[in-house]
Amino acid sequence: MRIKELGADEFACSMSLIADAVDHVMNGGVGEQIVKEVAAGAGKASDEESAAEWGIGIIKKYLPHVLKENVEDVYRVLAACDGQTLEQYKEAFKPAKFAADLNALVGAFKADGEIRELFGSFFG
Image (cartoon, rainbow, N blue to C red; front, side, top):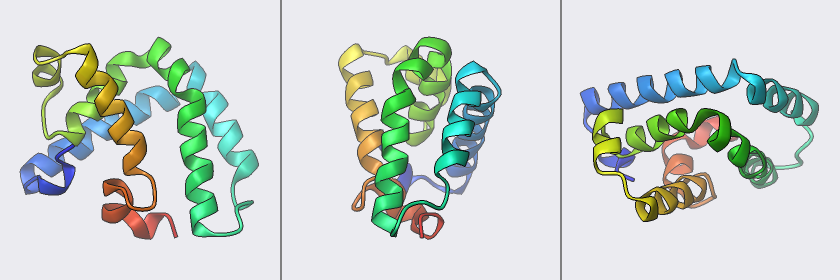
């Protein structure tokens, strides 16, 4: 993941790709399930770390469903985290890199991860 190294224009394009992917997933079948679970659990965590771990649990729980129903959106998010377009990501696609990218994305939400480091104020 290169998200911390992106310039302004790359970052803006990446955020747009992520927003498109999230919007598409959340407006689909699995999105309804995710919204219900998030609404049911919102505010129940006792501290920041518990809330983050709960969120990672949701990602892990629904990832197989998202991969089945919205794999193109997963590619969009992974491309965005690398500062690539969807087309660039797909051109360089290798199953091993895909698996490594998914693991890196989940790890990026952990306490010392890149996403938490960049957007930590949203987790507090």
